Image 1 (spheres, rainbow, N blue to C red):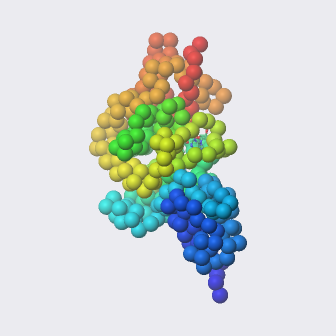
Image 2 (cartoon, helix red, strand yellow):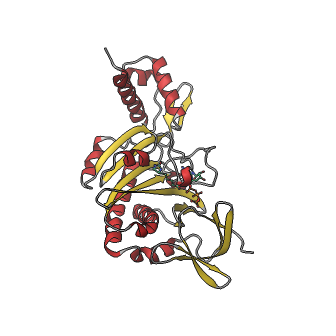
Length: 329
Ligand code: ATP
Ligand code: BTN
């Protein structure tokens, strides 16, 4: 008898098969997909409905079939797994999960890479929701164990942001900017977010979970996103293969974490300031109901924001604050 867990594994395999078939960006009739999977056409209709409910941007055109206009290979195919071998990571892949940060926190390993095609509870800072449509963007978390003291970790989300920007520049993207402390933006629109979570272990080392959400092929309106956003495919006007993007970011992140361990944030201070979207701008720093206004002057040697108020330079630590560009009164 087939057990429930076997059944759900089987269903997952079928969902992956459908995505893989559609990843050529061509039309596929329901009948053709049904024949490939040796199931009924009605069952394929249900699988397609499920994928659409998970946010996969599929279109159905009568007489032609289904088409995925912004296709991408899954982050689990053999080509990708082979390429990942060179990077010495412990890979944990989910078609769907709650949150890759959560999964890595529950089962932390140094150099672990947790990737999901779809997150049901992807989150940003202060538990805010992170929109994670199926097989469309990048949702990943990387595990890093370090002897560095917790006091130095304020700069880490900035270094992850720098790693994303440097990786995307290597691929050919331009005009990328950083917004303190955890956003990658282009043309004043959010492209990626970083969520760093820390845990102390028994030996006194820190277990660091660095979560990255990067919009790659997202095209359609997302009701849940409360701010302007963009994606790599919107910027380029064509679908982007996600595998190369993930590998390049991971390489750059590994290089930069090593530099951070050896040289501290100070090595990255000037680099961050070069990409700073708010540099010399009037900004508002919001903490709960309170807010202060000033002129942003980049970051200091530990990654704290420098804010000029009434001619005096003040230091703002990331913690629970948000930065908004606005008028100084
Ligand atoms: P700050 O970090 O300065 O407080 P923020 O707007 O960047 O502000 P975060 O908590 O870092 O806030 O990120 C969550 C924000 O990101 C929410 O406003 C949410 O609407 C938005 N968001 C959710 N999913 C996405 C996505 N896929 N792409 C872009 N933005 C998203
Ligand atoms: C932000 O801008 O607030 C950070 C968003 C971070 C989203 C990523 S997606 C992968 C990882 N898992 C999560 O639940 N969050 C991060």
